[in-house]
Amino acid sequence: DIQLTQSPSTLSASVGDRVTITCRARQSIRIWLAWYQQRPGKAPKLLIYKASTLESGVPSRFSGSGSGTEFTLTISSLQPDDFATYYCQQYYSYRTFGQGTKVEIK
Amino acid sequence: EEQLVESGGGLVKPGGSLRLSCAASGFTFSDAWMSWVRQAPGKGLEWVGRIKRKTDGGTADFAEPVKGRFTISRDDSKNTVYLQMNSLKTEDTAVYYCTTDRALCGDCYFGAFDIWGQGTMVTVSS
Image 1 (cartoon, rainbow over the protein chains, first blue to last red):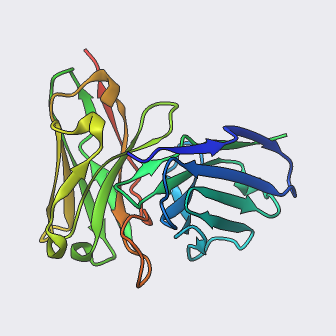
Image 2: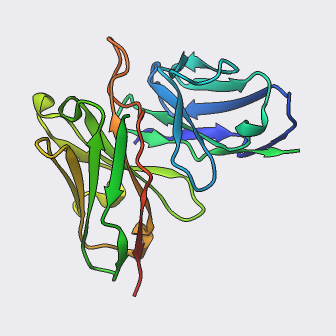
C-alpha cells in the first residue's frame, strides 16, 4: 500500500486567509492524486483530480499542485463554507487516503 | 442527475454477514469502475475495495484489512453494485459509501471518486 501523510492535521485560520495543505507519498505516484472536502455528516466532495485539475463546479479559489511524492492544496481566500476536513487520495496503485486535515475557525 | 443510493446497513453481531447495495442512476453505470469507501466514527476515510467494468475484466481488488472477508459484485442490468461482508469484526463498524471510480479525462487513470452516495451505517456489536 502507498502511504500518504498530510500536514498539518489541524489548521486554524480566518476568513480571507490563504491556506495550504501538504500531502506526501511514500513513493512516487506521478500525478495521480485527488483532493476531497468533507463537511460533518456529509459525503466527501471531489475538488481536484490529476493533482491540479479542478473538478467542474468547484470554485477557482481552490488549486492543486505537485507531482511525484509532494503535493499541495491551496485555498487562496478562505470562505465560511470552506471550514471542513480535507483528504488527499492516491490512485496510482490501488487507492489510499491521507489521514485528513481539519480546517477550523481561528 | 447523477446519483448513488446505498442500502442494507444495520446492526450485526461479530462473525456475522451483511450485504450492502448501491443503486446508480443518471450516468452510464456499465462504463464505470465502482469503489467502496468507509469511515469509522470520528475517523478518516478508508478505501475498502473496487470492481472494474466488464470490458476491463470485471475484477475486484481489496484493501488488506478486508481481503478474504469482503467481496464486490455488480449487476449492470440493474445498475447496482454490491458489497458482501462476511466474518464481520467490531472494527468494521463504519459508514460505508459507494463511489464512482472513473477516469475523468482522456489520458487519466481510473480512480477519482467523483460521485458519492449518502452512506449507510454498519454497526458490528454483540
